[in-house]
Amino acid sequence: MVTGGRDVVPDRGQLLLAGSVVLAVAVLGVAVLLNASMYAGAGMAGEHPAAATESAGQYESLVEADLHRLVNDTADEDALRANVTTYADRLARVAARSDGAVLDVRLVSTSPSAYAFEFSYVSPKLTYRTTLSIPRPDP
Image (cartoon, rainbow, N blue to C red; front, side, top):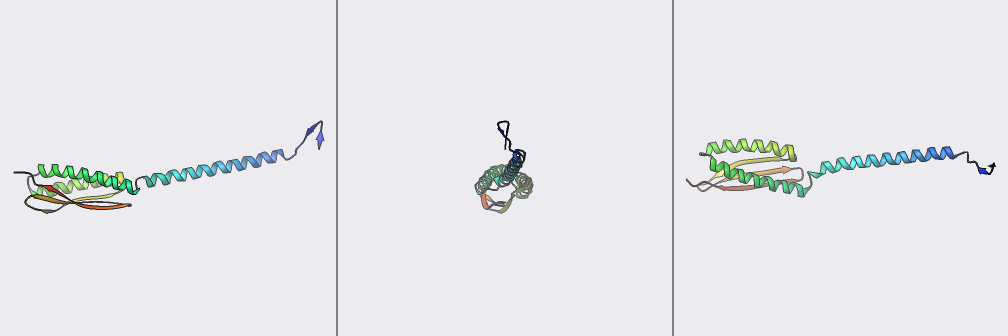
């Protein structure tokens, strides 16, 4: 239909409405996908196997240095066991809060020249155990 030299399209309003609904649904879908990927990425960041291995290595280095200090600063074996138990409890709380990991350190054996400690780090992606040998201080 031509009126006064201009085309009149009676469905223009409906097309505009349908287009805006499609655009709104697309924007909403993208927002939901981005939100889901953000939460999935945040949950997986600390659980990546390489990150877990790095955390275990960092804790092992820290524990080994601290055990050297505890062995050098503690006079007898009973006091050393008590100090190591207290230290392990406190460090386990830190590891649980920061990495969601279970960390344990305990004195497993003694010899005239050294103490043997078992170090374990367990996270959802990694289980790591090793024995740390710390020499006794010279008398």
